[in-house]
Image 1 (cartoon, rainbow, N blue to C red):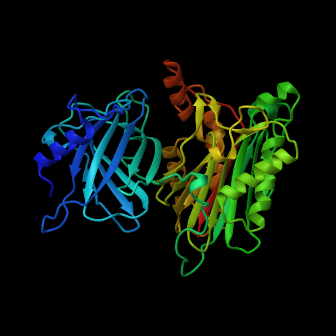
Image 2 (cartoon, helix red, strand yellow):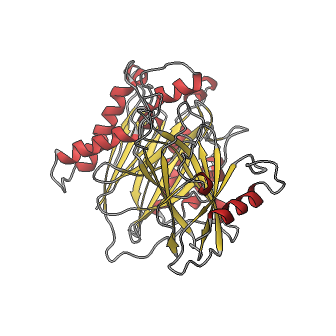
Image 3 (tube, rainbow, N blue to C red):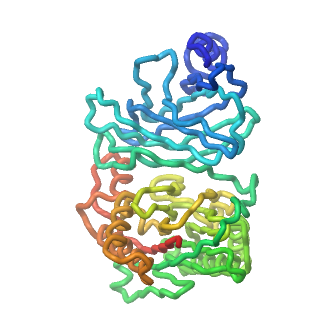
Length: 462
């Protein structure tokens, strides 16, 4: 075990080589955290760097105890407290907007980092009633020069300002840049392939409904307003693919069919999945190129997933504020994609116009799934109006009121989530993810939901 003295000296030499203070040239607070190695007390040979980025939302910081477990394909660190060794007995404060760095000394390499388990435990001696923490992201650097980014953009617990709540423990998975990996054939083959049941809810914006606009809800493809979706099994039966896209309504003012872009993108993505595509990056790239070749105007956000039924892994590609949420059958969040926004109300989007985001700007991830998991995919009409906690409650309510194996369970769940999103969207008083974000963005109290097209795809793993 590294001694406290040597750790402090190491910290000083790494973080402040000129002896000018306690922060690095990057402006981040740096700490050496010595991890116990073996019974013989051998010194650590490999040093990992972990950056913890606390968000800039109101009440984002915390003084609660934070535990981290770094998991790789060759081993894991085990859960350990993020604490400066020289601050023994004192709190470790993760302030709003802060970026803190910890160095981990290990006896062996962890291999490819596959996940981080992050847990917050409130200090019983704290005088604060709520000790929530909003985590923007974590970065992990290995001794071999590899870098993994773990986006979070979620709350742990309830914030000091109230109204923001989330689980106290989350598993984060790294996003992989398209140029670094093709994201295909992850994991080992299962003894028996998985199967799925799925359902869809789609409804246009309430104002469009009043004007006579109706949704088209097909088995493998549909749309409502500017939203569109697809879901299908590949011809070889090995992959189940599904996705949503949200067209930007404002193109209507330029005489452009604002929903055509999203419909065409989902149609082409479905064709890629049917033909046996195994890389999510290839699906996005080819579908986007097809829209461009067909000279379709407009723009849209997207979320597309490929579920490898033989290996139990799911590839995801998201751009903008459409996303995917994975819940266990107990309603606990296992994974959630974060939104991408240039500014509040300005999500990333593919489009024909100059300045549109590109297919390589998508956030890509690979997550394991297992029997009983519920995958919820939706446009911002869902996620602006239903929090992940509310989604979890809805899942538990539906599962508890219907027998296991009910043939329409996925459809019933999609309808329940969609109806909840619609009810919240037209409310002027309820607290929603959108009202929380608007409150923070405009520094004013905002309540109620956001009227919008709503599309929900639910997939139950069997």
